Every structure is written in structure tokens, then in C-alpha cells.
Length: 149
Image 1: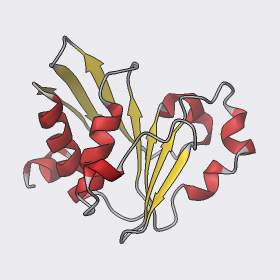
Image 2 (image 1 turned 90 degrees about the horizontal axis):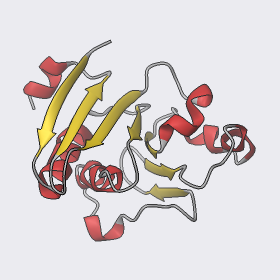
Image 3 (image 1 turned 90 degrees about the vertical axis):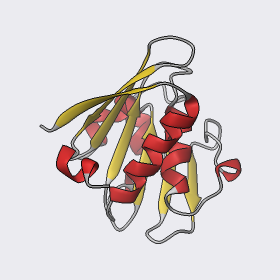
């Protein structure tokens, strides 16, 4: 599995990494954002959305609604599993119907539904280092594609 690491020195830099990621995503891609509360998952999601022309002010973590759909080309689906307590709730809520197809699907707290996610999911691990710095590990992306962006 392709994996590489980036150190982000600020929320703005984390968002820029998300935007760069968004530019290389293809229809059907699923991105799992994994990290502790406050690590920067929503900041990363805002960056991805920005690559699709969505103003970051229109992106909020859908913790209560669980799913936010954006009318982009391809469609962007933002899912937040923070409130999911059991893995089978993912299935019960019908969330799997948003995965794949022609959508780009971004899932915060993706580790809560790993049994229902595709094998080729792009995993983004965000580790809190200190107030501003984050270690971001990108798994499932070709580093060559990343460097060419």
C-alpha cells in the first residue's frame, strides 16, 4: 500500500493539503479521515471541498445530520460518523448507498465503519503533535501523483 507522511504547521496548511488531495480524486473515490477529536478532520474536509469550488464557509461537520451532499461534478458527499456507536448503524442508516458510484465520498471517523468501506479507500490519518502541528499520513495515494500536483 502506498503511504507517505506530511507535517502540517497550521490549519491553513492542513486545508491546502486537503485541496491538493481533492484535485487528484476521481469519481468513486472514498476518503476516510481518521484522527482524534480536534485533530483537523473537518479542516481537511473543507480543503477537499474547496477543490470542488465549495466555499469553506458552506462546509460544516455534519455531526448531527451525519450526511451532507454537495451539488458538484462529481457529487461530493461528506459523512461524519462521530455519533455512530455501533458499526452496523452505518448499514442501518443506508450510508453505504452514498459510497462509490460517481460520488467523491469523504468520511470523518471512518474507522467506525471499516467493515462497510471499500478495500481501496484512501485513508488520511491526522495526528495531533501540538497546537498547530499535525502529522498527516496519506495511504492509498500514489506519491508520484501527489508530487505532480
